[in-house]
Length: 126
Image (cartoon, rainbow, N blue to C red; front, top):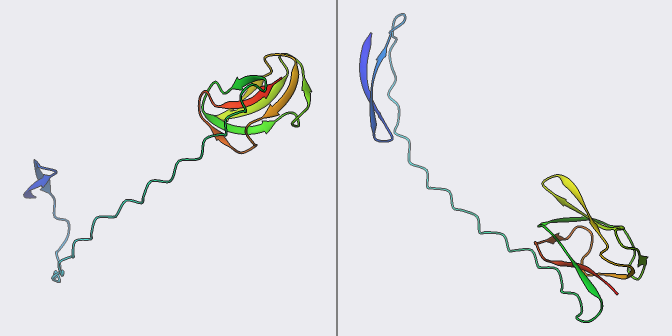
């Protein structure tokens, strides 16, 4: 058995290593040049926020959470009824239905595939 003291991240360890078999000739190893630290990639630009709905054009329906607009369930200008699903938001691999808050004509402020934040106006119902 051979004993060695090894320091790892500033902490010293005493280790014992058992020699097994005969040790052959050891070739010298050239020192390894230190690699430069990797350069961090620049942070990606934030996704543009959804355009605000025109003021005075109906009651806004806002996102209750950040997520991906997976599906718009009606066409712009369609008539919707209270509690009908109008948007499907995906957050953390779960689909969440967003329902109409009143009867009326829907005008979307977002498109499918858009990322939205909490409180973003998804559409208005007039």
